[in-house]
Amino acid sequence: MSDELDPVLLRHFAQAREPLADEAFTTQLAQRLGAARRWRRDGRGAQAVLGTIVLGFGAALRALHLQHARFMLLGAAAVTVWASFF
Amino acid sequence: MPGLGQVAEATVVALAMGGDVEAFTELVRRRQSALRNLLRRLSHDPALADDLTQVTFLKAWRALPRLRSVGAFGAWLRRLAVNSWLEHARSAPRTEPLEDGDQPAATGSPGIEIDLDRALARLGGDERLCVVLAYHEGMSHGEISESTGLPLGTVKSHVRRGGERLRTLLVAYESPQEQAHVG
Image 1 (cartoon, rainbow over the protein chains, first blue to last red):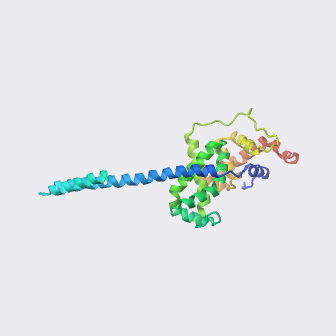
Image 2 (tube, rainbow over the protein chains, first blue to last red):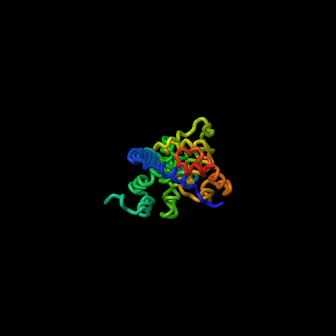
Image 3 (cartoon, each protein chain N blue to C red):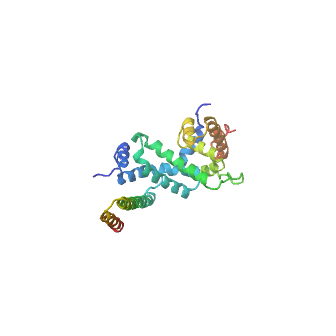
């Protein structure tokens, strides 16, 4: 069987194809796109903060295993608090 | 910078792939009508078709940096639209084709798109998909098989039987000579 199509139906489909105005559609899509981009940007920001917190706690845990290294623990905690709020 | 309206599509696609929102908006302007028409034929619901078209463009924006070639943009976008439709069709409650009593008006009036959509709604889901991709999009049976995951023989059968059924349903739009060839 070939891919040959019915010419009458092809004509019906061609007649039914109508140019659709783009303004309202494009405006609405731009709003959704803007929201998606903001969400992604905010997500990246949250990821950076979370990463810093994890690094801070990691440094703190390492410091706990070192003798006379309480200042490192304090430093890591300070970095963690700073990254969380700023 | 002058508008992108006159710029070749390959260039606009390349810009959009680099994250240029203005270029992507230009692609939306150029392609929205074709995609909305395709999804209207598939869904016979203009509001749903517009929503699925928006979903398709949002997916395209996210996936565009991974597009292999700027020349493949049109076919790639159409595949995203078909996938959006398939995802919707799988997740939505199954709807039966319309009953015989709900015949297309077929009065020879300029409402062919409405009656075509009504007639398409009387086909089964896969049959309608194959007929629309063949007749509306001009895709070959092989391309439809690849896009939908349906076996090639099934695609051929759906296009042939669905086409015959549509001809019968839309017979009032045809000239007497054309009607003589139906059935």
